[in-house]
Structures are given as C-alpha cells and as structure tokens.
Length: 200
Image (cartoon, rainbow, N blue to C red; front, side):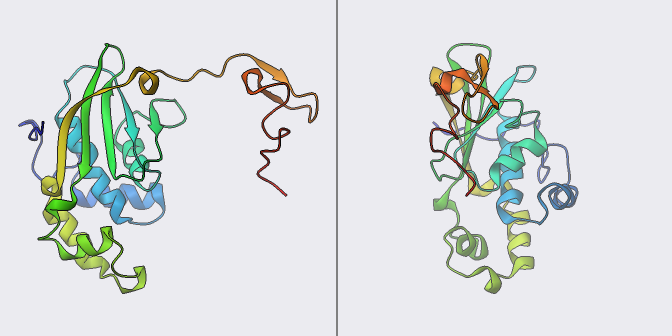
C-alpha cells in the first residue's frame, strides 16, 4: 500500500540539504554529478521522512548503480559497516528497515516509471533512449530538481530475516596455498586459491 511523504519533510529538501548543497556533496564524494545519485538523494530523503524517528535502520539497495552512494552520503548505513546491503535486482529501489525488531518493518522507495511521462529528459535518461553525449545535462538536472519526490513511490514492507541479519565473518585461518588470512567458512583454502582469482 502506498504512503505519502511525512509532514516533517521540507519540500525540495534532501535530508536537510538544499538541492545545490547535495549536488556539491555528490561531486566531492562520487566524482561527478550523476543523475541517478541526484534522484537517489530524493529517494533516501523520502524514505527517512516515512520511518519512525528514534529507531535504528539498515538499508537495502536493489541496484549497484549510484543509489548506494546516496544512502552512504545521507545515512550512517555503508557497505563497510554492514548496515547497507546491495541485492543485484537491477531495480532503482531502496529500503530502510528496522534492524532491531521482528518483523523487520520498513519503507521501500522506487523510481516509478509510470510517473515519468511529464518529465521527458528523466524518461529518456532512465530508459537509455539517448546516448550520454546527446543528453542535455542542464535540462535533466533541472527536471530532477522540479520533479523531486513526485516521480517516486513509497510502500511499507517487511524484510525477510535472511536479508535483515548481518553477515558475520566467522573464524579466520591461514590459507595453506597462498599463506594469507581468510574466513575459514570458505573452505579448506581461500576462495582465490579455489579458482576465483580476480587477477591474471
């Protein structure tokens, strides 16, 4: 069931930052002003407006592209501290959920394709109808500013236990082949020595 933005959220604000402040944050953190990250800021802000204050939340991103950086910029949730999980569904969606109570209730926010008809630059960007070189970045950025949260949908969800639980590394040992430390749960040798090498 869809829910609306809570009244404590200021229009046009991105988690207490102006749009232009957030653009500068993106440039410093991400390296470029990515449209997905601009939209992601509104998504995180909308999620934060619809969760209960004073609780501890973890995050799930359903894509590896841009959205995890918005979560890491605007919340304490990062991949490094384990409070942000990325599931490779390829959907431009995120969830903030209560990590302390069961069931793990939260809110899911996604970029709603059905709401993009009035925003031609966002539509063309999202559906990759124009090569990057042909996109009008200034017009796209202005559409994102004007659209704000109007192109998003937020719903209440309960997160499954297997996604909500923090993965623990477990015991560590020394790989008998390469001599480096690794999680013993991976087997008799480290994953790299089992053939999962990244390097040639």
